[in-house]
Image (cartoon, rainbow, N blue to C red; front, side, top):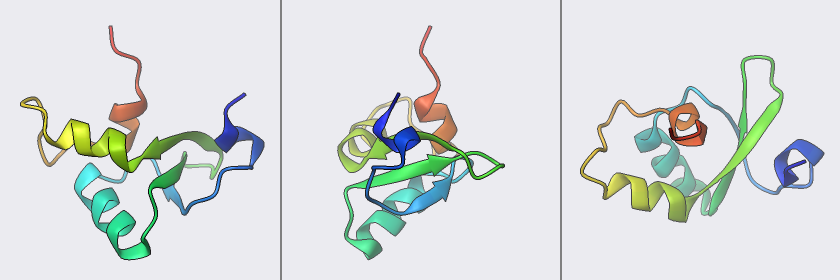
Length: 76
């Protein structure tokens, strides 16, 4: 079970449909380095870090339409 699912993760809780750009802005404003992601039922689905989003943002595959749920999705 992940830290976020146990409820022990510190950080703002946000919906997983938030875009990466908005998440990065929120993280900068709140001065945090991680967010707890929640689904539409407000259930924790994961944890995302500033470092992971920064790597993604610098990727050639990145667009401003990428949502946090897309970052958590397993790659195939």
